[in-house]
Image (tube, rainbow, N blue to C red; front, side, top):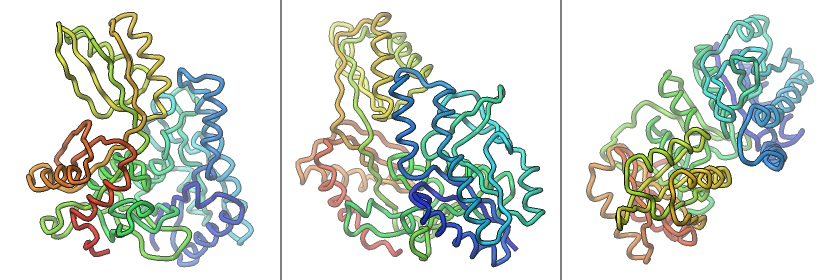
Length: 407
């Protein structure tokens, strides 16, 4: 008998029919004798609607009241799935974060898990019941609800798998595994049978929506075995593993892209260290993460500062930067939403000069200009105009011969 944590995403539980289908997937695992803990997201579209409601009333700052609103979708799903399992003859009950509890820090909408008490879940399993846990939720030191960031149900599932010493954490979604490019845009995208934690983390962080990046980081830290598979079709998925076989034979494992980024340029900032420190301190205090950064154009002791952030944080960032202007005078704020971030992912890619050369040559052939670039040991990342997305993805997929990757 194995112990598995099964997580079902929003599209997998989008309506009552889908919930009943998920209940049958769980039944098959339970009938095989396995101990199961189930984690669920809100039904597809629900969280977006809740964000819209909360944002319409308080757009400038995230609070615990936002978390109360946003976390309600998972409560509904967990109760409904427990009902569906009971109709199949199983003893099941739903758990909210505070009932376990899943303890986090106090950061609104970006809570980080500090501790999980497993006693109640272990008792539930001993009595041959199937616990259904509302994902995405936590509770802080004051007993207030917190949330774990968008996609946070993945983190809930991995954290529970680590705390419960589960044999594996299965992430069920609407795709049948991890692909080396977005199959909706790249016709020759191939499904991977396995991918390393490091590569999957970068794929997720750079725009691939299969897993939340934090959940992969947590799995890597605690050695949780991960598998991504579909709740719609019964096919082999993708295993997330510690290391890839024959790593040098296939340097590039995949291409990720994100169209949710915004480029901001702050013009004519006084050129001293405290200026930039003040800008990023204020953004950090308001929980606005920054991605790519470049400082340019030293003219008359002034500089331009360019950085990228997620579009969902743009309105709050604009509010913060207007306040910063009262402290650090600058002349202009330029915002470009028509960009896409494309990332070439592969272990050791930065040390391979051919990979970098191929990236620029391929884009140049198609007259695609690079606006920003950053590198790490495992990725090459560029910002280009959004209207080049399809051409760039397909050209790079072909240039790196990713269609030859064995599934």
